[in-house]
Length: 199
Image 1 (tube, rainbow, N blue to C red):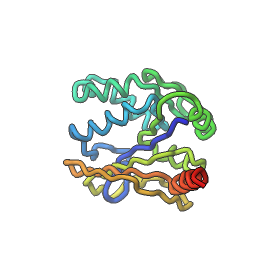
Image 2: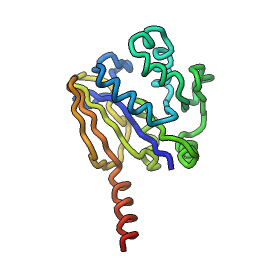
Image 3: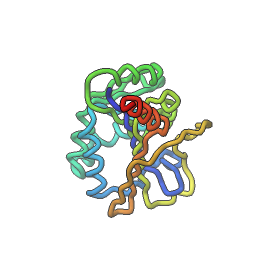
Image 4: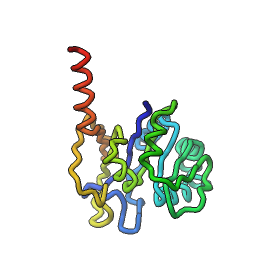
């Protein structure tokens, strides 16, 4: 079954964007771009909510993005994209499909189809809506060496406790740290299944 990976960057004080959706505090260098390229090589579909889609669609098709990072721009522009929104009327970015239905049942069906993994980039509210349905298989949280002081916290609005297990950590030269998590109940379920096979 295809996996869904959630990848986003947060500040040291836990904000994934500024109060007006600013992302200009992201720390990006060649090594960070290598992390992005590695992710994009492993997936065939990018999943967005409306706000992140609009920001990405306004940037990646531009000459500036292709001039500054042609490899990432090429992949972002050419990969399949799914946008979940009830307010958008169209999604004009290349290979983008607008879906105005609830995300969980749609993604549950897509996970069963043949293909590579899928990634949610940013779109914290969308990711939070999928957590109760156990649809996210891996969380990749990139912590930037920046304190914002204000903004929107990751998974804002979630009220239930959701435990994750750290499976890997990678420190980059820029000071960014990439944290890889899996849902704890998914880890436990895999352990039980493996133990049952041994027994």
